[in-house]
Length: 382
Image 1 (cartoon, rainbow, N blue to C red):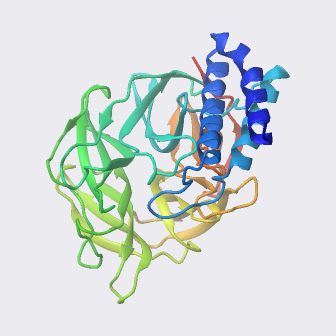
Image 2: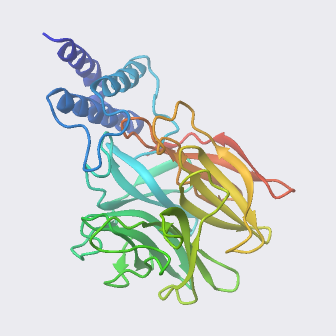
């Protein structure tokens, strides 16, 4: 017998008794270990570990076995190795959005697969979870999916939800088979039943960009802030070509009715070392705060007196815990939300091999306008 088979059988045998548990945290952990072991088995059998765009870090038999062994042996010791990390069993949480309704916090998120890049397994539905205390979470049924429309017939990414006049607007990234990205819209009155508001995208890049249904076009990660005067501001990740070459940028659009959007251009910020992804706009104390993924670095933030211009870099809030093997393996897609008189900041730090879970930290606003990240919350499935 080869060494892989011996280790694979050892871990399966150790894991078997935990399949009898009705503890939600143990069931979550078992589901993740199963994914890792299955992925190790398929690659060991000769499956190509990458997707359409190559192979990224961590897609090796050794990595998957190592992580599966670490989690399994922790269970044997009576530990919860994935405590404080929230995910739907068997899945990875990536881009997400929070919205409160009647004292309940709702979380919407990309449903990715543990062990697989997005170009290998479709991210074609949004997950939904709820909590009344930000610690204990109940996984609801998936709430939204791709459609056969030519601009979203492959995947959907990055839900961003805003409320106005009792209607919830979910802006999301529609992705077609050529990886052309655009911003779609669905609406709801109860956060459980969603209906597309348009058969076409509501936002695509302006003349400064490059957008075609036939090629990769950057237009993703939308978020919307409805300001005190009712004007809505959308920020999204894109690329600017106005200088004749591709430059990572953030697109900005404004709206008064949440349906029609006016392009305000693409901003190539000097506050970011590389690609600025998953922008999140928040207003506090009369000032605007931009939280974003500084790819390859971590989660950073900036402040401005204006929702469009004048950003001043304030620093890094969440740094990688280990070695960064690729630009995506950093704390990313952060959101900042109030609930129950406290503030929180989220992130999803991807581990090599595409493990990614939601983390939540307490956040405190300082008198000088900066913020401090506090303790990580002990997230639990119920």
